[in-house]
Length: 249
Image 1: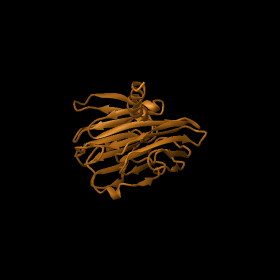
Image 2: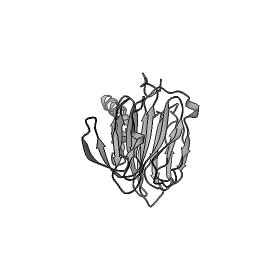
Image 3: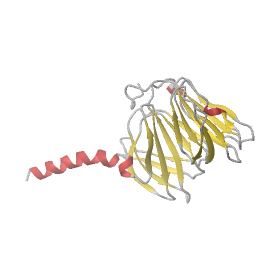
Image 4: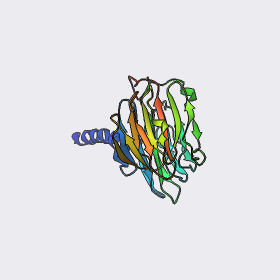
């Protein structure tokens, strides 16, 4: 009779971490879209009034990029510290910076809206500097004009984040080579012509939230072939990948 409780205990120990993995606990809500030594990109979708079972939240410093207008969401923390937070309604095209968590966070999620929620979670795996400045909410830029532009929305020693507008029927200057590797995020669905080094061109359809990774000094020449401006968010990584990405050091 002594073997049964021990077996059950072993099963419970092995199953708990498995269940708390968000990609296992709620695969319909969390989808890993891209990952390398520098970043991990997760697309998050909550349906109207959807409830998500308890799961672990990443500790890394994170850029939350809101793809659509969406209503409030309740996060009920179920770990050692039990409390509840409500994320207010957000506007598509805005983003938020979340600092690295000191301890592991486990929570349940509940959409409080009749509309779907969709955003990207860009987890930074690079060496953290100026951690006290990595915070804040950044509303979307005003409706783009007919001119191409680049605007720095946030900058510290770890990252630089730019809002890039590509005017209709014009080349997109915001994708020029950078001395740092970077991640491009589409804030609008768009149509581009991609020109490679030998001068050949190909048509490129970009969906909302689609990402592109650029190594340092990579050349990505894009021309907006649509009739409306295209908007991108460019995240430049200024520090190297951390030895311990979970700790940022």
